[in-house]
Length: 381
Image (tube, rainbow, N blue to C red; front, side):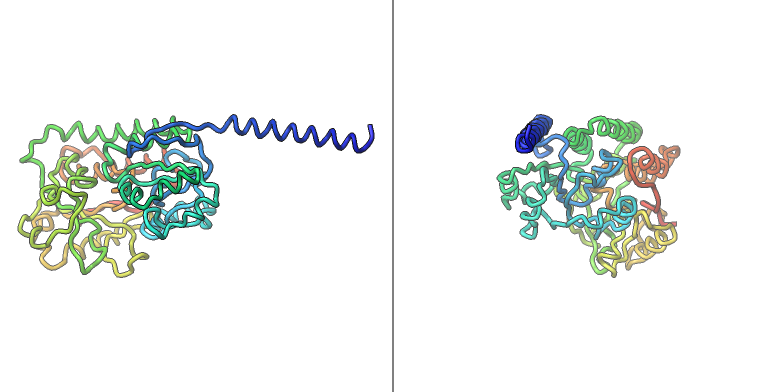
């Protein structure tokens, strides 16, 4: 055989191998049909390798599934975790330094979103929040992504967390080919929730204290107050054995309320929410909960909030029932930890044996790729 014949034979063999490999790749790429939390029937590639998340704090959920590296398939995000939960961002950055180069595309529900950048990365899936479904529909972004061959899936850990957390994780587990991990956390979640439900279900209304939740207490020191209606943390208060004050004031997710209304009703218990917002808003007086928080700071900040004009006269402050909790629980599958703290504050004798601290540590040890540190709730001492 001459050189030309040999070369032709090798090229033919290589071409055949390439064709065989390409066919095998096509054969192994599986598309599945799912129904997302918005009720949309969507065809999506199973176990996608290139995912863009419409909110950075979705990592709280994805970390439960891709436990070795929750960023292994994430090619872009929104930088809300960087801005509003920098403690968590630094915690993950230490474990996964490559995320320093992760591009931020802004909000997918506004004109600022870099759609061209998303498409150029070969993105296979975009995850969005159910609470922004209407905005996404009105902007036409879902259709634009569909035209580019990119699937859009809606999940929910905020609008109706007690109903949608497990289904959202099971949906992601199916798409990411992590069903066993989704089921394992789902079982744990149900166990932790039933620990609360089983004890509070028999408490009569008259024995359930009225709870005012101050949403993002002190974020803007010159402004007060915003609270939750019968949703999200408001709903979690009701399920923890209390009566959410905001549920009688607004049918919506949240609302602004006057100090006069709070002072007039004088709720039994006050629970604020806080996080490390000092970098996003250096003037904030919020309790800077998170992985870098310490108890001395928590007490100092709680004391300052309780000392605002008129607040020392409230029954909750006088009676030692003034508390605060990590704001990001409101958008996280870990909200059962907040509920355990609520339950202990509302009915201490009934939940004397329950330890939110132990639960938080177990959550990290069993399901998360980062270790537990910091402070995530506190009571004025």
